[in-house]
Image (tube, rainbow, N blue to C red; front, side, top):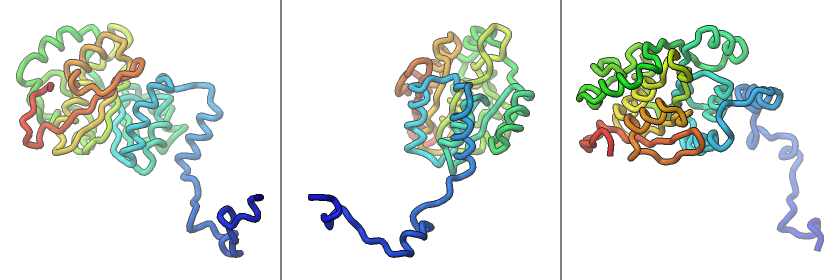
Length: 249
């Protein structure tokens, strides 16, 4: 039987239904248009692989629109912002010149300049100092006595309940470069200090020693959900919900 003669596979549309799609379709948001055009015409690809990106993308698919904090401003930033369409995505970047370059191309991205005091070669000393109780006490990182806590971030970083946090900065690839020790620690403390619920935290470049050691120590192996390539995914619950949780499970 042909499809034209089957009543179950055909529908008669009125003139108004054919011409008026306002009730069933809408214009593509400009932010998504920019992302599609950029990635379809650019020869520069994000530093994360497609498999690594898919780990975070799956969580965003469930939680967006949401609050997404990203340490780092890179070639993947427009993608993260688009995937969290309707939510709030903030990028923290160490290089002011790079921020200006990105802003000139993508002014819709919300980015802030931050300064990191620690260097990669200081990682061992910082790990040793972090063994004290001041580094396992949950509270606002702005008032922490732990040397790993970043205290000079924009106030909205401390005052927003973040659903996702990505640590893919600062540089961290040579001894004199800013290391990710403080970014990883602070991400974990922001997650623990939320009033309730849980925060998904992602750390990239865990093939490197600093990212490997500090993510295991301060985001905790017991909270790790998955590792895909160089990306680790942790889910950290609130430590202020009355559950009296230990720093690491």
